[in-house]
Amino acid sequence: MRKFIGLLTILLGISSSTTIGQNTQAFLTSALYDAAIWDDNHAAVVGANSLLTTQNQGDSWSRLPINRDNYVGAISEVTIVNSMIGIAIGNDGTILRTADRGVTWSQIPSGTGNEDFYKVQFIDGVGYLVGRYRFDNSGSFIPVLYKSSDLGASWEELPSNISGFAGSNPSFRMYFITESIGYLQVSGDKYMTIDGGITWEQDVISPGTLNIGSMQFLDENTGYAYANTTGNFLVHESLDGGSSWSPLSFTQFSDLFKVEGDKIYYGSSAGAGAGVTKSDLNGGNQQLV
Image (cartoon, rainbow, N blue to C red; front, side):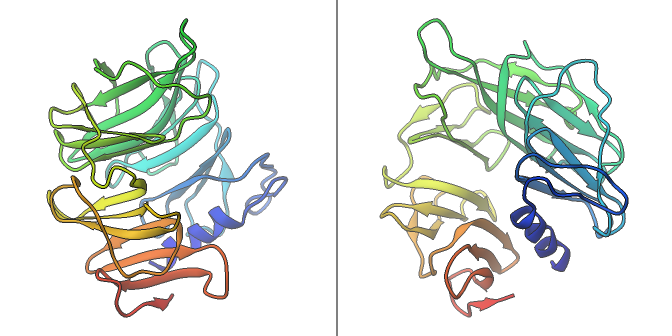
C-alpha cells in the first residue's frame, strides 16, 4: 500500500517540463493520468504521449521507446492484466501491450486507427475496451467497443445498439462485473449489458441522476462507487449488482478510490483534510494514511 500511495503522489504532483529519473532527459508536456503497479519494483505511468516505467521501486523512471510502425496518439490509461501483462490505450487507435511488467511494449493493431480509446478493463482474463470514432457525417460521435479473449494480444470490434452521442468531449466510464454483465456511462447517459456488450439497455441505474466517477465490486451483487447525485461526490453502495445505489456516510472526496478487503481508500484534493483516507466499508473509523 505504501507503494500505491507513493505512485498516486507522483501522478498528482508531476507537472509540465519535469525531468523524470536519474540521468533521464524525459521531459513531459502535460500531467500524468494513470498508473499500473505489478509489484514493489515494476510499475508504469502514462499521460499525453508519455509512457514512463520503473523497475527499481520508483527510484528512477525511464520514458520508454515504444516499438511501433505507426504513429501512437495521446495515451490516457494503463491497466494490469496479470502478474506480467499490461495494456495501455489512447487516441488514434493506440493499444500498447507489455508481457514483461513494463520493460518492453509493442503496438497491437486496432480497427481503422481513427478511434479514440478511453477505458479498458480485464475481468477473468477477458478484456473490454471502449472509445469513440471521430465525427461521422451527421456530426455525432459513434461509440466503439472492442473485446479481447487472449489477454490483450488481439482485439475484435463488437456490434453495438448504441447509435451515437453528441458533444465534442464526452466522458466515458466502463465497469464490467462479470464477463457478461457490465455498465457503460457516456457523459450523462447510462447503459447496462447482460450479454458481454452486444446489446445495451439505457437508463437502468437508479437514481437516474447518479453520475458515477469510479466503481468497484466485491462480488456480483455488492459494489461501491464514487458518485454524485446532489453536487457532492460521495461513496455509494449497491447490493443488487449496480442497478440501484445509496449514499454512505463519507466525507466529500476526489476521484481517487480503491476497495481493498474490508477497507476503502479515498482521497480529498482540498481543505485541511487533503490526502488519502482509509475507512471501514460503512464509512466508520476514518483516518488519514
